[in-house]
Length: 92
Image (cartoon, rainbow, N blue to C red; front, side, top):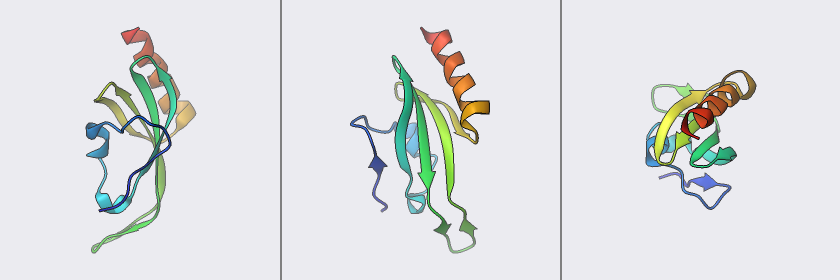
């Protein structure tokens, strides 16, 4: 099983981890947080699977506590930050 790389002491919520194959070896970091709402960045290297090769990607995810609100957002400024701000405003 691939090793999980987290740049902060918080653990990555299970709902977010479940969105990745172990072979993808995702690395996570918290980009922003507002109370219990966190904006995560995931980075994966190129991953060769038996049937195909997955290119490496950087994606963004929003969690509230252990609940995954949005996942695999492709763009920080167009998608992730506006949704993060909307989620923070709705909860706080």
